[in-house]
Length: 110
Length: 113
Image (cartoon, rainbow over all chains, first blue to last red; front, side, top):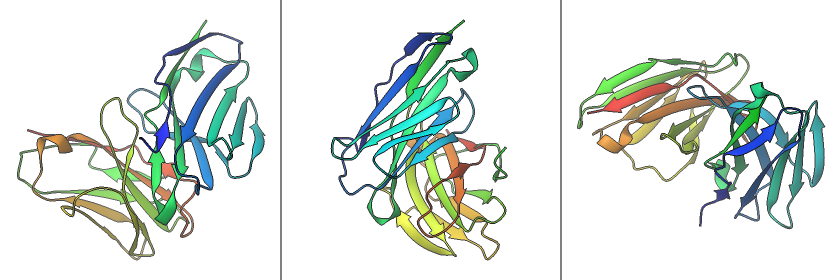
């Protein structure tokens, strides 16, 4: 079982819609969770961090964390073609180890 | 731009050789982490350095080693290169021993032939 699981996609949404990206993790002691965006040929860019159960909003982005279900999600409101990228979920485990999922590819159609 | 720099940008090596990759962390950051990203995969954690000490390590063999210098810059050394070592190597810097919010450099593309 992988430490972090994501649907590889692609997830296609029309411009202006809400994109919902999901991630599950296996290590119950994980306390820190992150979403990164990676454009093709570029390095990952930090979008959001979340440490407590519930929702955290930053502009068009909302991260949601449910530790009991070991589930993290990212909502992108008013999706734009420029949001088309691969979204990586990352989890900090024990002993300062970080685990990334394989990413979900998002396509926003004009 | 994150302020994290890496060199070189691209590198081609032959199987069995050794390679050194370099990273300068963002101003004010004292923690550096290294990742390997194969095509189509997420980054795989190699190790993390905090104040010149290895602070965490992923499932990579000992031929992957590192250093952090007093100015918090870092090196990744890989000995006895194998074909499967071909990947994008990413450096990320952060603040504090827990190394939480990490900011990535542009990466070094290593090709082993």
